[in-house]
Structure formats: C-alpha cells, structure tokens
Length: 147
Image 1 (cartoon, rainbow, N blue to C red):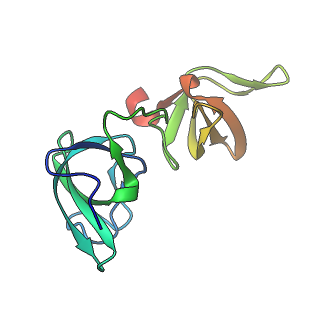
Image 2 (tube, rainbow, N blue to C red; image 1 turned 135 degrees about the vertical axis):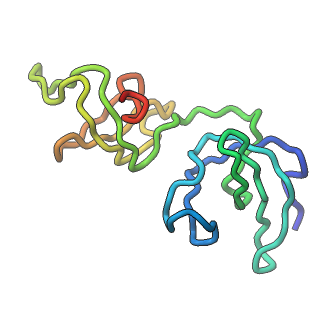
C-alpha cells in the first residue's frame, strides 16, 4: 500500500467530513469540515491494515481531522462541485415560479436534498415548505451567510 499524498501536500476533501465519534468536543454526526475545503497533510498511517488514513490540518478551522484517501484530491486539481451540501439550509436570492405562479418568494429558507445536479454540478434539489425544486446554484446562498 503506497500513500497518494505526503507531508505538506495541499489536499481538498470531496465530501463533508462529520464526526464519527472519534473527535472529542464534537457531537457524533456534527459537521467538521465542509466538502471542498483544503488542508495540508501532516502525516498518514494505516487503519485495520488495509486503509491509509491521512491526518489533515485545515488551517481555516484550525482543525486536524483524519481522512481516507478516497475523500481527498490534490488541491490544485479542478474542483467543479458547488460548496453547498446535503442538509444545508439555504435562502433564495430570487423568487421561484412554477408555470408563471410564484411558489417561493425571494428570501425564503429551504434545505438542500441533493447536490451535484446538472452537467457542471451547478444546481441543487431543495425543499421549500415540503415542495421539491431544482434550483440553480446562482439563486441560492447559505442561510447563515444571508442573515
């Protein structure tokens, strides 16, 4: 087994990293690192003799997290997926209409149900008041950024 990354390499996580119960001070399932975030490899080791686990220091959050190789890509590799992810609360920047009738007003909050929709990962499936909509990324912002 040969590691794909080494000390000092800058890497990007391709999926949200949540606490699996091994991070003290964080609730199980709590989001630790958003997908698309970059960090630096501190070291690596083996888990159960068949998985390489990389210790990644995410400078923005000043957090060190263990990541599997399949969750990482080189930071300089193109990253096309949007930053929104499943479960995020989002706010619309524009009204959304169905057959010319406004179904969601600008400023309403919904929740991401699916990501990476479309050819370029540029739209999301979002629920607003129990209804599902396919919404372009350009029409959404994280609710916490909008407040």
